[in-house]
Image 1 (cartoon, protein in one colour):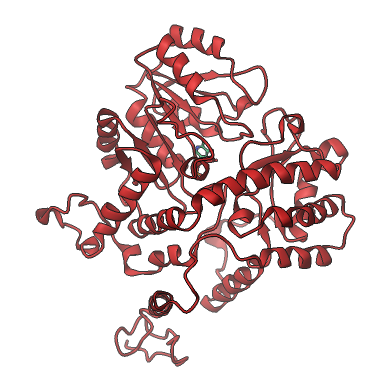
Image 2 (cartoon, helix red, strand yellow):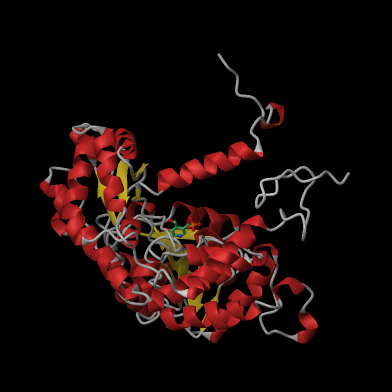
Length: 468
Ligand SMILES: Cc1ncc(COP(=O)(O)O)c(C=O)c1O
């Protein structure tokens, strides 16, 4: 039997060329498949562009633009892209007076909120129980911070028992109710929950972690948690929101904002300046190029796709309730004798990526988790859904040939997507193309910057002369 080798003992035998070839091959393959993982999405090439530029390497902390505080100079030419683009756009779309763009991901935002609003060690926070879709990490992070944790639960995976919540709140008086619905087909009724909290424990803050719902909130499919009375909300910007892997925090309360600002200064250092600019670009696209339409289409496509799968005999959870009010569907293929892992593998071979996972509320075995957010962003419309459902059902049951199915998926993937709709001959696009070329080749041009000795000059294809 081969013993697994320690990483330090392995010979790293991949070359730079190998890595590039693998990336190119993956990019080509990815451009023909449909990614239906609910916690992922795509974004435009233009929104990705900042991450290829010099800004990617820079720290930026001087949000006031104070001339005495340019300790790190690299952000000095672009800082207003964060303060005058990303921040105000997020505040506008999220209807909040105060926002933070510091969190690096949903979990980083979670840690920031628990540390800022969860109270001192020994305080109690309340979260949603994992059986009702609460995130597995919330309790673990809170306990690691010395906080006590209680869970809100309900009679079934899709709703909370608010009478029980009122009793628990009155008894425990938590500093914070952290609404962390993650595995969710139907959103928690935030207005009723907030009313319950205000009555039973008026000092308790309510934060809604809308990581999975964020694009649907900004697009108006779900009510903004702040309009529903929550003190703050936030979450990942790369699930239903088609943006970079990052997260945000929003509130209308200056006091709440101040507590978060104080904590973020020591909990998060670099907040990835270029990614923050990318987020600004993605928000701009969302506002000006059909974000609301996209969000409505996600919810519509999800419900319809659920129905189409049911019609094809695929066991979709909560079919009696319309399958989903958001972007995800759960399939209990194991109930039909097809293990979730097998179903997901067959779908993968047909060019469709989905999750198989344990822990979905109400499941005994692993289930299949499917999202319509990225396909919708890629331009899949209701007219495409019957074809997608046929392919999907054939793949799950192994009744079609994978290569024929994946060719049909590739045709669907060829639809024009949402996002920037500049005319292809717009001058701004050729400027962006030049910037891209410059960014990719920076450091490889012999005349300006020799890069590392022996590296190929990508533009000329020549080997660089060693300077050593
Ligand atoms: C409610 C909630 N919080 C946090 C996270 C973690 O987000 P990320 O993967 O961006 O760290 C998730 C991910 O699903 C989530 O649903």
